Image 1 (cartoon, rainbow, N blue to C red):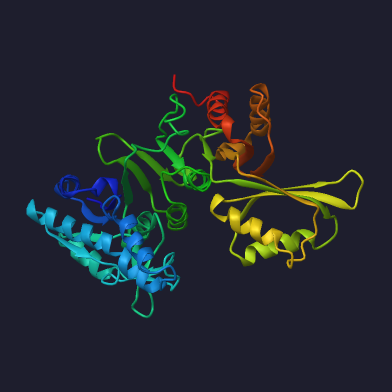
Image 2 (cartoon, rainbow, N blue to C red; image 1 turned 135 degrees about the vertical axis):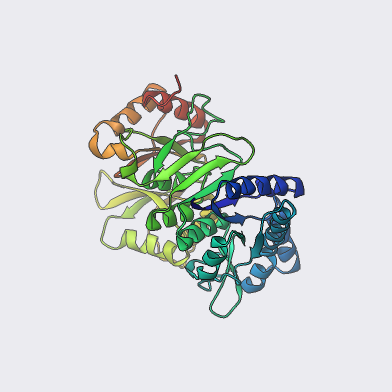
Length: 406
């Protein structure tokens, strides 16, 4: 017998029929003798509808009331899932964030979980009752509902699994696992049986949409084994585990891409202490996250060209800030470019193998693809290229690193 947490996203609970199918899957685990916690998202499209109601009511809305409204979607699914389980003879009860309680900070709309008091839940699960949790939500220290941000139900599920001491957290989605790259673009992409927390964290942060980054961070911190499976097919999934659970590491495990990139170049910035700090310090104060950075010293000396990337959502604010005449920024020209994509090659095997970066550069060169910016970490090499080469680059790199299915 094991204690497991099962999480189903919006498409998996899109209507009552699908909720009933979720209940059947949960019943199968209960019949196998397992203690089960079930975490559900709002039905597909409901959260967007609720957000629309808030924005139609007020452009300058109170974030606390926003959370009250948008958390309602999970409450509905949570109650329906409990009813569906009861209907097929499974003892079940719904738990909203404030009832558990799942305690968060007061950053409404993007709250972070501080702790979960799960003793009563564990007791009831031990008696055979399925605990059905509303994902995406908790309660702050003033007893106001607080939501965790988009994709927050994944974070809820991992946090609950950690708090309950679950053996595993199963995330059911509309894909059947984690692939070496996007199978919609590279038909030879293959599903990974296992992947390390670090690799999954890099994949998620570099554009892979399978899991939310915060959920992976939490799983790694608390050593929660996470399995990604399909809600609609009965197939083995992919396990995210500690590195020591994988016998032999691949040099490269996956290739991610992100179209959410904008490149900005400032020409002839004074090459003196404090210039970069002024630019990036001002962006940080506006909560604008900078990703890739390249600095090139001008041949005549005394000046440098500064190139960096920001997310597309921050692009307009960044341009406005840099062009502000009262800002005091010193540069000759601002050159923006939104026609870019970031390609990242990821694998913990890079730590012990040389030549990963050179293979990437040679492969792109052979395809006539120019590299605009490069950044690296211990287990990742990322490049910025023109967006029109996205598919060509992914397919070529996937083959070059031997990731194609045979």
